[in-house]
Length: 447
Ligand SMILES: *Cc1c(COP(=O)(O)O)cnc(C)c1O
Picture 1 (tube, rainbow, N blue to C red):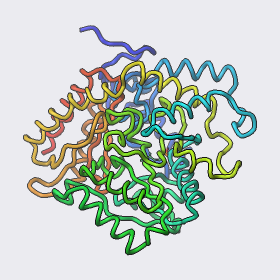
Picture 2 (tube, protein in one colour):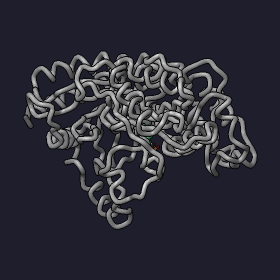
Picture 3 (cartoon, helix red, strand yellow):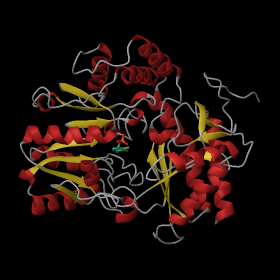
Picture 4 (cartoon, rainbow, N blue to C red):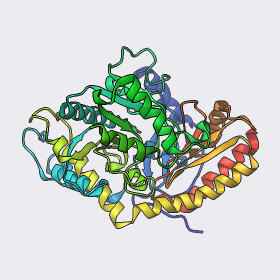
């Protein structure tokens, strides 16, 4: 069998030539400890020299299968040529003007694409930022301005970022919030639908728990926005029961509340649709995007109803780097790749390949309590056999096993017991199969 080679020369295979981490990575890790704040942790201390398709190459020459995509960012594959070429061309033309000082076309192109691709065919506007957290902050700013209300509703297990406001919106304490308070006020958390843990409830019924809490404890008329991840990311790839999201959206609409879909992790074909809200049949008032938007370049956006987005006075939104021209070029390259390669179908192919194998593993290993997700956003939740007690230690051990065998995997979840898969859509199928074979061997060894 001849090896597949990605456009930038990265051979698409798993190949270990040293232990993990190897000597050169270990030496760099020592320098990292001396130079970089200890607050910035790393999951797998191999230093990367090159990456393409679905493979990471470290400084010792090890080739790892990448089942994380830099946390759902390199959806179109690392160093995708359409992204890399667009970025290089733009960097040679100009790198920055500040869009708020003198504008440029790429920013407008990205906004037009967002307005066209996001759910709903109503009049929309977009604004660009640097990070997901910044997009969420701005969505809340706009919703508060437009509604003249202050309360913001978020869900149990939600994750929205690490800035002060988004820490308040985020549920999990360790490591995101511990010691970093006080947090922003007027943020209220309500129940979400977590079918594996709250039992076989109808999504509408769970939504009623949430909306009753909003009515009784906050007052719907005080609420500016409800911020919802259609599939919760860091919280553990929790897919709500059918009817939950649509019921929350209906409640928001009936009460003049801005319904904000945080699609920073689930957007851009990750779940087999352009946006996970497409699957729910829900048209949000506003949507936040980042991660997969620009093939690895830092870019984020808020897209929403024109009347809301245009409510804010000129100068009220923005930032020095927001919608940087090089990042916009990367986004246009990534979006073009998604359109030309039917990326949503590629994500569904990955689901079709992985879910049956994960389900077969769940038959063999009672530690797998749940297999869930959509498209190329999939997870297994690990428990103590016969219970729903979280098995975080097995998740950590399995993660380590995979890393040591050349597969980059990630964990997630409020209880730290979720094993998540976010391969790039450019990963050769054989590598995904191989990653699952390693995972299975890990289960055999560790259970
Ligand atoms: C990652 C993430 C964020 C924060 O994005 P950053 O770019 O890390 O600031 C917000 N919401 C969701 C759903 C995310 O997955």
